[in-house]
Image (cartoon, rainbow, N blue to C red):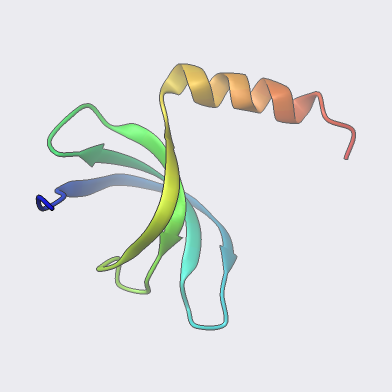
Length: 73
C-alpha cells in the first residue's frame, strides 16, 4: 500500500475522546497534496495514527449541516 500523505490545515473541533486518549475530530485536511477537505475521524494523541473516517467537500458539509439542523433532537 502506498504511503498516505496528509497535512492538517485546521483543527476545527473535537467531538469526543476515548479512554485511551484518541480523539474524534473535525479537521480541514489536505490528502496527498490535493485541495483540503473536511474530515471526521479518530486520531491518536499526537496525530501519528488515525482511524477510519469520512471526508467531505464544502458542499457536502453544508448539506450535512442542513440535514442536522432539520433533525428533531
